[in-house]
Image (cartoon, rainbow, N blue to C red; front, side, top):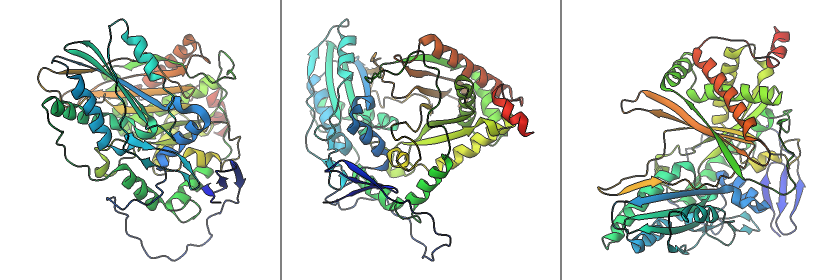
Length: 493
C-alpha cells in the first residue's frame, strides 16, 4: 500500500484516511558541500503516469475534498451585443478554449500516490436558452451554485442565454483549481478569437502555447524539491513559515454579530470603498519615501483596522501573489496564484512609521517564500488543524481585467451575477487605477463578508475605519499607534 507524504511532519494513507505524525527534520547545523545546480528550465516535457497537483492547487483541492468545493467557484457572465449572435459558434468557441487550455478538461482524483491531474477529452455541454431580461438574474444565480466533484467532473460549466438576435449572455463557472484572476484576460481573448473564427466558418488559428499546465506543475515540483529535504527550496520555505508563525493566536477574536452556525453558510455581501486620485498620489509618494509600495501602505492600514476591530495586537492576514514569474506562463489559463501570509506585530511597532517598515519587511520576506501549500503548513503548526491559517485577506490588483479584442460593432461587458461566496471573515479586493497618461486615478473595491456572521452596519464601520487609516497614511505624518495598540509600544520605549 503506497503512502502519500503530505509534507514534513505528516504521512497520509489514502485508503484508511488516517494521518500519522512524523518528526520534522531540522536544518543541519553545518552546510553540506554540494555542487551548484543549474536552474530548471520551464519547457515541454514527457508526461509521467502520475502528475501531482501544483502547489497552488493543494489548498483548493483539500478544501474541496472536505466538502467545500462550491466555495471556490469563480463565476463570470459576459453580455455580447452589437452583431447577430451565432449561438452555435459561441458553443463551439467554448469547446475550442477547453481543448486549448488543459486545466479546463482535467480531473483531480485522489490516488494512492496522492491527488493527481488527469487530462481527459471531455468537453462541457453548453445549453442555449432563450431568456428574458427579468429571468436572467435568477438563472445566473442558480447557475453559479454548482458543486463540482473534482474527481469526476471537469472544472468548467458554461451556458448561453439568448435575449435577442443581437444580445446574448455567456455564463461561465470555473473552479478555482483551474483558473486564477490573471487567467481571465487570456481566457476571454481566446474565447473572442475562437468565436469570430467559428462564426466565419473556420477553426481558430492562434499561436500554440509554449507549455501546458502539467509542464508547469512538473517544473515547479522539480524546482522546489522534496519537502522532506531540509536543503531543498520547499523544505527551506516550510521551515521559514513554521518559524514566522510560531506562537501566533490561532484565531483572531472577531466581534461577530452572530455565532458561527453549525451548518456552513458562505452567502456573502460587500461594502464598497473608494479613494480619489489625490489620495492615490499621496500614498504613492509616501510609499516611495519609505522604499515600499502602495500595497504595503494599504496592508498597514488593514492591520491597524483589524487590530483595533479585534483588540488583538498580533494580526495574521493573507494576500495572493500571481505566481507567473516566467514569460511562458503569461497566456496560460490555470491556477498559479499562491496565498502569502503576513503576520504583523502591532505590539512591536513604536509608531506608524515603524509599523510601515515592519510591514515592508514582512511583505518582502513573504513574497520570497510563496510556495508552501497551506494544508501542509497547517499540519506543521502547533494549533488545531480545524482552525484556518487566516481569516482576513487583502488583495490589490492594477485596474480591471480587459475583455480582450473587440471587433467593430461587437460589445462585451461583464454582467453582475448577484451571488457572492465569502470563504473568509473579511476579503478585501482593491484595484488601483491609472489614466491614459499613467497618472494615478484612484483606488476602489470592496470588502466581502459572510452575512451569517456580520451585520452590514458592523462591516461598514470597519471599512470606514480602514479608510480613515488610509487617509492618515496618505497625509505622510508619523503618528503614534492608536490606543490600545500603542500601549505595549509605549511600555517598550
